[in-house]
Length: 68
Image (cartoon, rainbow, N blue to C red; front, side, top):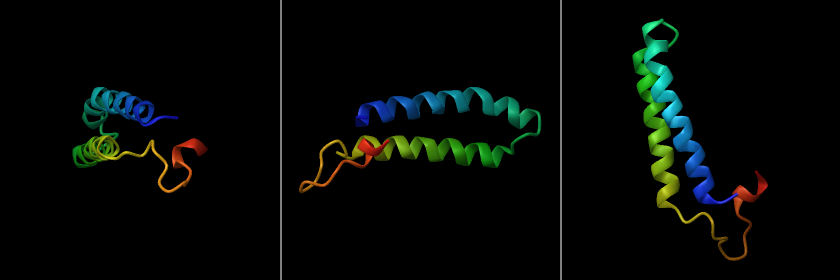
């Protein structure tokens, strides 16, 4: 699995959360604080992976995403 594939999946998940969380907050299933924290965590995960060159093994090490 390549870095770009992981990013696509994370962005899909982020869009789903942004769509669903307002209703969950409104229905009392999720607090606004928790929703905000989870959205921010997903945004930061995307930024982190985009900033890393994790598709290239370092010194012959296996890419950790190959295990997925």
